[in-house]
Every structure is written in structure tokens, then in C-alpha cells.
Image (cartoon, rainbow, N blue to C red):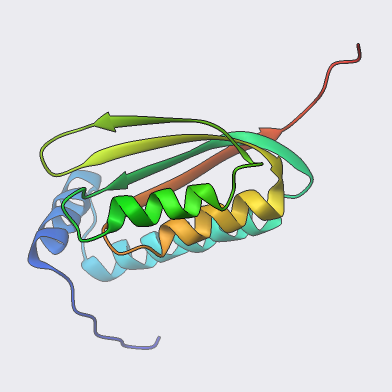
Length: 137
């Protein structure tokens, strides 16, 4: 085993500890290992999607974070061919949800998703896709 140390905001650590307690974990280390495994599996799944896809990108962000909304809009404008629709929802005073309906090449959809994930002020991004099929006319 390798030993690492990390710095986390107190609120995030408290929320993580609450989840560990609810799920019956005996140690943070086990919870962190499982969380990292889940993160890697989700990344590998996203990396392996290919072909023509249709799906939804869900983005939770802090609208008060400097330039986050402008940055989200700039990224969306870079993917006009893949974005079919968007919906903006106010979750609370501190969080908004952007729902982006996408259709197109998996590589482009993955690039859109990863660019959103890297933004400061973005709390969570989730991509859900399925194979895009066209019915014969």
C-alpha cells in the first residue's frame, strides 16, 4: 500500500464522513479507495464510448463563482452541432443545474463533458448516453 496525504475543504470532508457513516465504512481509507475506483470506472466508461451517441450532460455549478456561467456558455457555443437543447434550473441560492441534451460523435460529446468538468466553480458533471439510432423513412 502507498500512503498519501491530501487537503480537502472542511465541508467536503464532513459530507464524505457522513456518507461513510451512512454506508457503514470503518475507515476513510476504505471509502477513499472505493470512491477512486468508482471515479476510474466512470472515466474508463466515458473514454470507451464511440460512434453516434445521444444523451444528457448534467452540470451542477455555483453561479456566484467568477465567470463560471460565461465559461459554460463559451464551451456550449463551441459545440453547437452536438447540443440540441439546454435547460437551466435554480436548485438553491448556491447551486444551479444546467441540463444539456446532446447528439453526435462520441468524441465531441466526451470533449464537451471534459471541458465542463475542468471549469472552476463546477461542482459536478455527469454524462449519460445511449447509441443514437435513426429510424428508416
